[in-house]
Length: 400
Image (spheres, helix red, strand yellow):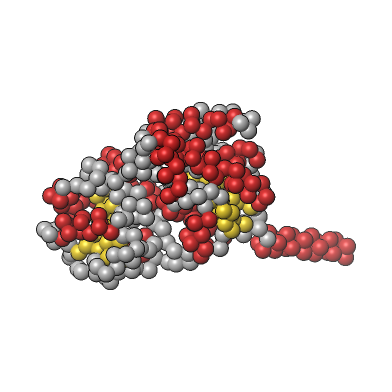
């Protein structure tokens, strides 16, 4: 009898020690790989935080210039490749086209394909080989991460960036990167390379990305970006009762302060609402501008958002049911604009700066049309029903 009690006690001690070490020691090494731009990095952060919260080691493979974005997160940075200014210049030199201002299948495939692979893939592969991840998570347009995972034989999960781009863009990128895969003895991808799992941040109303056969689609709930360790404390005073507040923001890439100021001037001329705006640094002398900051802190009390149509801004606003006026300026913003218009949760203008009267009409519409408010609320419910980052991290860990 005594021996039985000793055996049970020993087994319980071993189980306790096992649980204890599982808590305090990392379970996995998870490498995130992304294009070196805020709009391609921010969507990965909630999932990276979820893995870190499980006790996993998390690293990011991207350009060294992204250190200010990642410094406060506590993630390891594995520097690889140059920043977008170098990438855009090289892509334009090769194609004669500006992939940001005038995206075409040729310019976009050169930027995300051969230029990023030529400038980044070797460093990314070497860093990953040394760091030895158990899982790689890339964003949809990050080809160095996809190639690295294939070469090393590491499982890959791919996070979408929003509504799917037109098929001709995916096909052009696949054709562009095929030689890089075959050079490593890998099959040429038939479409834009993705992982064993596609983690789709796009709610059904905006047109989720189709996935190839054999790929598991998981939803991943998008959220408005917040600073490391921060809640969603509002950056603004409470709104004036009965008076709408409209946020004008053109994100991190298109946020030229003079463009945003021009839009503000046009809107304030005739619309009875409170307007606040953010832009890239340098406009803080205008009291209507808030310093560039985390999106989550800007949305308290906001009735509608006027935006360039960056995927992070669109999905972050819709996660709170806020209707949109989308004023696309370039890149993939026309895709988000079309998706918002088709879903009925906002109004899209023609690309470029709209006529002031057209812009005012669009804002009046989103402020007064109940059908648009109802559509935005429906999208919010769809987003709330998607899998949380914690749930996705646990699901991926359980299948490895």
